Every structure is written in structure tokens, then in C-alpha cells.
Image 1 (tube, rainbow, N blue to C red):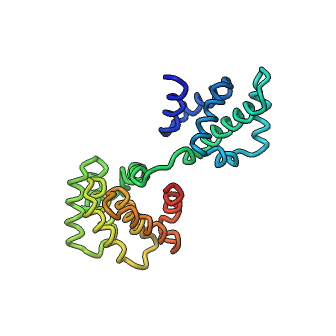
Image 2 (cartoon, rainbow, N blue to C red):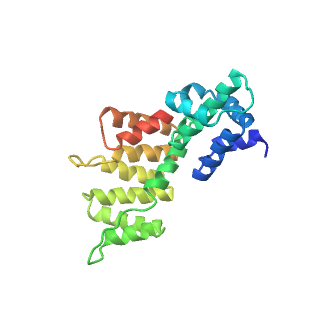
Image 3 (cartoon, rainbow, N blue to C red):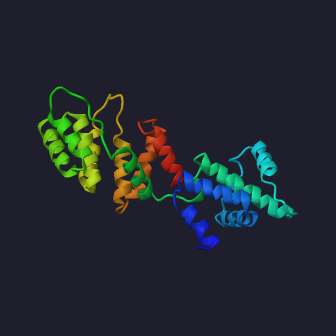
Length: 241
């Protein structure tokens, strides 16, 4: 793999700690490679965005610790320091400037991080909700959804059951059903926490049908403007849109 392919593959993915460390060390030890990274980032038009990620003191530290031993041009040195600064930004988690995630990618990441499993409380007896949660966490999502749907039909005022049913439907890819349950959640008022609008926008982003993305964006904007549950997540998604 040549340098261009290597650099492109690095910024096209989400590098782990080991790959990030390897990439940073190569920038520090190989000025030619650092310059290639800098030109690549410049082509992506992010050098101006990343310039503010590292304090001036850290630029000086990079210069002192990793001074190029030969006599580089000023232009080469500037590109080298800029490339090192970008990697330092990545180490601190500032990766989003290198590419713009699609709404579906953001939805996938949220589902994987937040909805892979649901909390099961310890109880001296087994009830249907706990049974459904255990099935959900075991990957038996269809069975879990069946339990949650039955519970919702028998007790239409149970907010938690509707949320679990929506989660299960979303995981199964039944977006219309998931959206229906999350919309029902919106009718519950006075709750301390109600992520109904965030879950609706999540489902729309994942479904990605005609008009879904625009509607999801409108819901996220409402969450932010009305200071509703999920505001921080909504702000993050809107910044990456």
C-alpha cells in the first residue's frame, strides 16, 4: 500500500488507539510522510478548521521535540507542524473534521452504542417486562418485541413498554412500527425524561425514505430550540449534518 492509499484509508475509517499511535509516530519520524499528510488534509479543506485544535504552546513543543534534522524550507516545516497538530487533535477525539458522517452512519453508531442492550433490574420474581428485556439482550429481538407489543396492548398507559417496543422494532428494521411507538411516547406529558423526539429522528435517519432526512433534521432542531431530552446528541448530529 503506497502512502496515499495508507493516508486515505486512515482518514476514511475510525482509527483505534493503536493505529492512531502508529500514524502519529510516523508523522513525527518521517517528514516526507508528514508533508504528504498535510497536503492530503489541505485537499480536504480542513487545515483551517484544525489549526485551532492545538494551543500555540503545543506547536512549540512539537517543533522542539520533533525538529527535522535537515534544513527544510519554511513551507515544509509549516506543513509538518500542521499535520502533527491534526493528529494530536485526533488523539483527543476530534476526528469529525476529517469527514462528514451521513445521517444513517450517525444513526447506526447511536443504535450500536445505546440500543444494543437494555437495562434489566434485579427482581425476586420474573415479570413479562424483565422477560422481554432478557430476550432483547440475548439477541432474541423478535421474541422481545412480541412481549412488549402484548404488554402495550394490555396497558396502553405504560410509557416504558412503548419505549422498549420501539427499540426492538428499530433493531429489527421495522421502522414504521418503531416510529409508531415513539410517536405514542410523545403523548406522555410531565415526565422527567422523554426521548420521544430523539428516537423519532433516529428512526427517520435510519429509514431514510422520501422526506425522512429533512423531517429528522426538523425534529432535532426542535429538540435544541425547546431544550428537550437528547439536546446534546441533537446538537452533535446537526453539527455533522
